[in-house]
Image 1 (cartoon, rainbow, N blue to C red):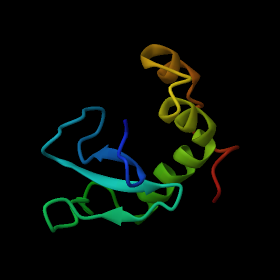
Image 2: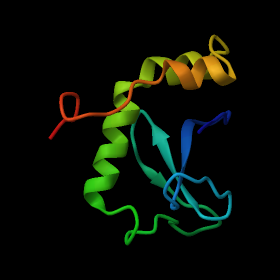
Image 3: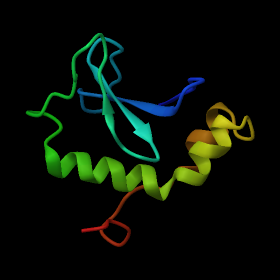
Image 4: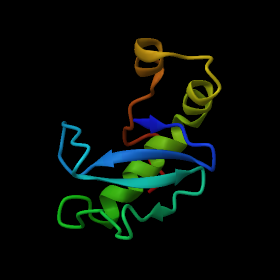
Length: 95
């Protein structure tokens, strides 16, 4: 879920499949996709989110960047934001 911050745009990504846990997630800046530390530590669980899965996440974020920007700019809200997201499939993956 995108997270608004006055310093940079970022998304929090769960280390748990199909479930968000505030205490078990990592943060990427967007559009740079740089992982940032939480409490001084990188939080990505590489056993769950390996490098290939991280690339898929970046592809998904890139594909939906317009909608993420609209969310940040208060153009899209809640369900409208969620419903606008384009699912990632083999045709729109970068690899």
